[in-house]
Image (cartoon, rainbow, N blue to C red; front, side, top):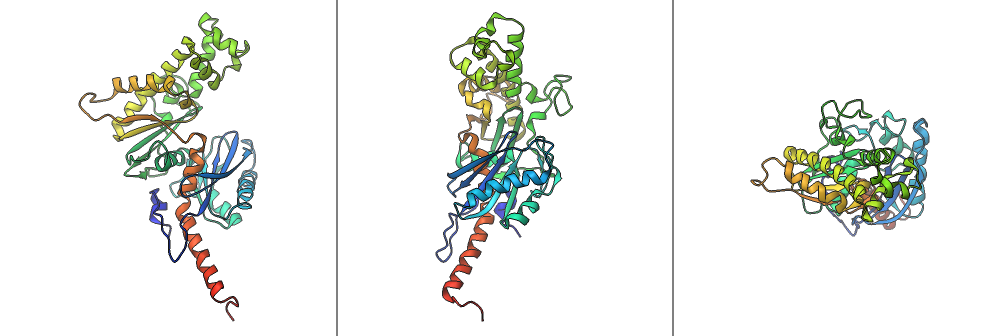
Length: 361
């Protein structure tokens, strides 16, 4: 049976027996839409070595994706003694953390990923939703440290998220909790890729920021001059990082775009706080790298929309601190309890061989 800490997503204890070192190395693999990032991580959450691969296309067979993951792990295992592997995948991961039910960027449909990787690696494998993995990383080693009631909101092309209560990841009955981006905030609003209308991520995400920036530029508004100039006159060349750079240089139109996203973000965060009552909300993902351009209007909107405002403690709202490493670090740490069990078994075998080099007769 798995360690209780591993089953529930609790911080593992550091243990050592008979000289055994608890600081074992694990590999975290974060599968994104364009790249697979892998890192060898210590018990302190430090990435001591890393590699990356391109993510195979959506139509690629599941076995090819597995090969790519294994190739990255093998490279790191060739340089370090690895005791377990954690894999963070975007999409629906079943509550048992063995099966990826659906991955939007890959061909995985009810893919038994954990068992498939274990058969080939012969190492313990943990599979986790990428937002849960990032949240765990921030709670253990980043902006969530010290707060056991935590909500994490990741802003990328869409919105993902996770909740920890009492230091335990809340995965839901079927493992599908945290799909914050698909809360409907506007009845009959913008069509979302999920099929519904008015989803939160249609108004507060990287895609929403870029869509509004391009719409402003395409309208011929003189306010979009700086954006268009930075994009070389090409509307389609306007990207999220470009909007961030232009806003950071003082352009009022670009800053206004962030204020609009921040307004929607703050309202959604207020709803999450009403539902979960966390002590802290961590805002992560690529869009959060804009810093106060995003967080300042988000905090204003959050305070204006918070239920019971003025008569209740107010959750902190802070930026994530681990950046792109959050998923790798988090899922590697979730695999660590399994790694320690393997490391203890290896240690005992080595001690037995040292005591009796001839082995059993």
